[in-house]
Image (cartoon, rainbow, N blue to C red; front, top):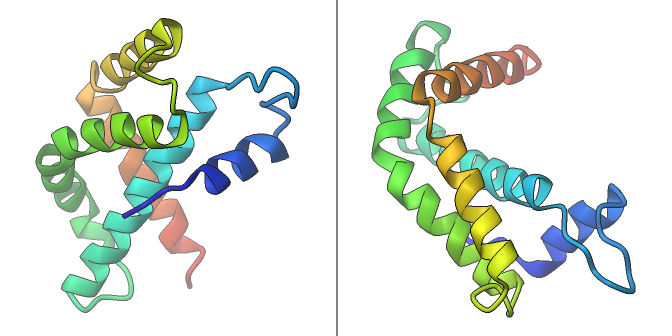
Length: 130
C-alpha cells in the first residue's frame, strides 16, 4: 500500500496548502489524506476478503471496532513511513516530526470519538451506493 509524493502533492496543491517557493506543508491535511488512503485501502480489502459490496449497516460498529483495534499500530507506522518517504528531510525537520507525533497522539487520544466518526463516515458513504 503506497501513497506517493505525487498523491500528496496533488492533494495539497489543489487545496493551496503548499506554496511553490517554500513548499510549506499543511500537516493536518497531509496526515488526513494519508489516513483516508489507509482507511479506503482497508475498507476495500475487508469487502473483498468477505465478498461483500458493502458492510451490512448493523455490522459497521463491530467491524470498525475490530479493525480500529487491530490496525492502530499499523496506521501509526504507516503515517510515519509515508511522511519519511514523501518528505526526505522528515527525520531532520524537528518541527515537522514533532507536529506529526502530536497529531498522531491527538488522533488516538479519544478512541471512542475516532471509532464513532469512522462508523458515521462509512454509513454515509454506503448510503450513496444505493
